[in-house]
Image (cartoon, rainbow, N blue to C red; front, side, top):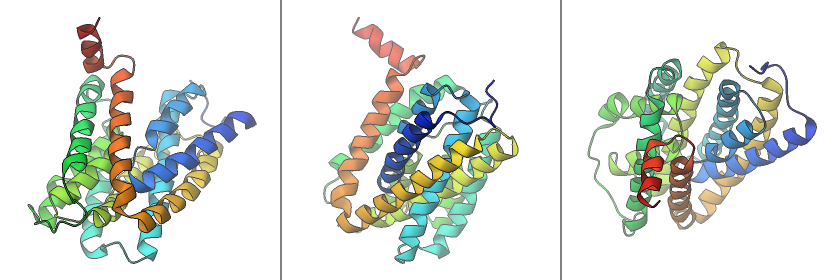
Length: 268
């Protein structure tokens, strides 16, 4: 196993920080930054557990940065958001603790399907940003039944968690798209921090690499948050649909994905 105290060479470090910058930008708007950073960490020869832990640190830095940017503009509803964030934090920590207990193949098969459904819903719901929607559940029920479940998924696996939070906020809480983006960043940051706390206590983070990537991710997240505020749903909606589709294709094409292997067998 790679010693987590050892950082990669300067050239690899520069490449990884550049990828983290782009990932932070995407995460602030539509999520999916881990689709870029985690495979690059694996390609750099980082031990899988150290790669996951290091990636979680930079992802948490990006989501906290984006949340801060939205909060400065008064776009975070703290009264309802903080209880949801607390439950998401607990879910993220529980997921990280249970990472070896959840069937990985099941997540590989189910998550791409869910991502495609999320993309289709956002793509084909007309005038999503302008529609006043009625909440289907209370904030209390969301805290108990939705935030910890999605947070748990983030601790175990992670791809698409920002998109899942965004859809839940729109569909279940009746939030408009820009409000859902802000809420989802807060909840995503919370579950990232919950999972990160477990990984940090386990000593798996490569700190020099994590800090460099986190600094780049913070810059990217600030830029992404500003673009989201400036361009609104006109940017968020197509980017969210695109990111969900790309994540689904990436997961289906990864080695060992049972659903991907089944689909390949149909056409060969």
